[in-house]
Length: 586
Image 1 (cartoon, one colour):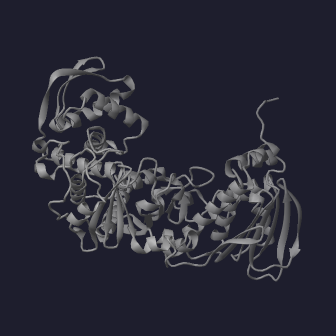
Image 2 (cartoon, one colour):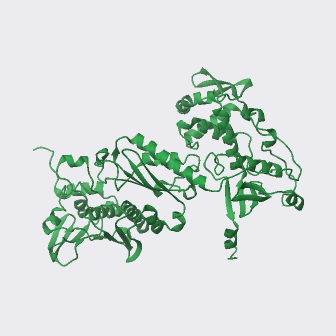
Image 3 (cartoon, one colour):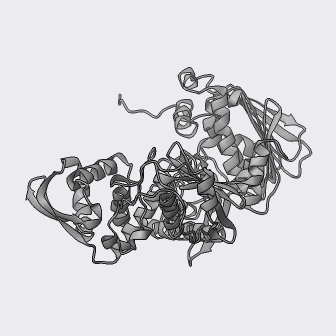
């Protein structure tokens, strides 16, 4: 007798359930997708104990006959495809015929369904994959699937479920994303009979986002729309202010199917280059439409992982589209102008921290570091200040001084502004460095004594990739041995910074992921590191009034004055109205 045998149906169904049903949220997703495929216009989801004891999904779709209802719980039984060619152009959410038998195999399931014509429907009860009863029952047109006691017959799986609140959170994510996938359908979510979401049909992603996330988030959204010959993209992305610490706030849809799309997430991240801090991820709800033949959804039983032809071209288009929209939004915001004050009072010490010759700017425009000088809030200093114009909509009327020698405080016509002096100076340095690099003729400075750079094996690949860029900006590097290099000259702007130490820090931070930019922006990586590592204005460092003025002037002339090279904000604005609210004055 052979040792290979066909598994019984109940065991096969439980194995399939392990792939399809990961947690209660998986059941909610599969049942909602079935309702959408049935043409439902309203879907109601009722949950108890995070879905462990009950998940009920009711819809007003086409319903099923008694015969179809029974067949629906057989493996690989589906109404959505009929031959192999249909797999090349799947337009429905489901098609594998695995969800309902997998759900029924690990729960106590009841189905109540009726199509358009019969006066009565059919009620079926299935327990652990076995049909217990089937009878006529009165009900409205549509289908209700009730799933109770999830994993009652697989206690090991049940032990891995999280707390009720955690599982409910996953279900909430599922319902929210399914609601964003189909704006033409009303979704109602209840937990313990309490309504958590009631989302009527919406005309746009933004309209639905208002109900899901509230007005405060909706006001921070940027509309996205664009198309190529084979692709349409529409949706919203968030301004940097609402970036999150993970990618959970990113939703991608292809042909209305909610998918997991890490390549698109990376393209989105690249569009925010220089605007977000390390470890922050932008908010996004984006719909992509393309030919069905270009998308393979038959990759995984959950149908969330897909393969897409011309993925690289789509990523490039998505990055440029989002980056362009962000840039336009920033252009509409109040722009920074040029400070026009002259002759501020107070003792001034002029210690240049960057070389004027190598940067091609005037000495008097350089930011200076000073020892503690006069109190910037003294009457003499205040009386000597003239208005600082940033734009018609933003004008600084008085530099008030520093907080803990870290933040510059200034009064504006509309309220006040708080500037992070280190982040601001990093931005100034970064942009000057980039302009110097792009000139094609960076000034070099030979070292009095050559320095040896030892490159660790784990850093060698990235160093080899970065070396042409380093040499193009002024480093002179020669191979000295296996893993050893001689540094003979450096960009003149480095001044007295130890070049080997700087490059070692650069390689270490790249490995640890602290250097944010990609290899296509190696010049930016180097510029960002130099701007941070060389002698620049730091936190807890006193600045003279003139130095603060000079810094703000240079910041105002930057292409992006709002973020440091690592994406941290350089300033925060407070309106007078906001301060009045904080003090309950209105």
